[in-house]
Image (cartoon, rainbow, N blue to C red):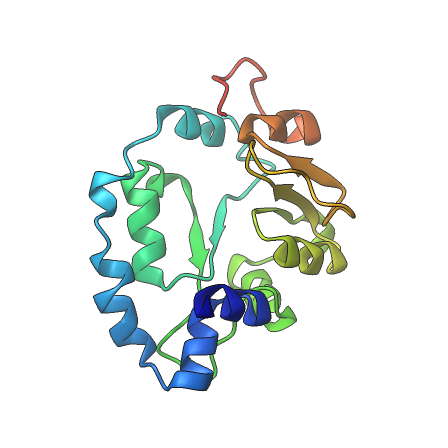
Length: 186
């Protein structure tokens, strides 16, 4: 499929659609991503909220980092009921002529700048994309590759950590959490 090829080649299907098919990314976002019936699919997730609230805010700044456009990224976290827990968002800006996205180094640099990172070894990154995790680890970020529970873990690993449930973050980085007794998220 074209979508999968562009995702594999560029890290973002939109990038390939713009490069090879002259698709207007903002119009595509309006007609596709923003038109998806996510309200029927995504609901507030108390377990996810509990996990995110259990991070020690003195040690962790929660920051969204997405290849989606800002409207889609904000919509998803709002529907999940966790939008108020993030201090900011770094997104793929479809309005710019030169779109950048993960896994390209410029996108990681953008996230570092926007989130105020001074030391990349203090960045913690969780993603389901193998190539994004490889790029993150190469920058020195503490990287966790999220692999769906029913999907075999890749070999070689994309990063030092591979998990299938977000609750496993507590065993990867226990020092970042306030309360080990928070509700489990799987």
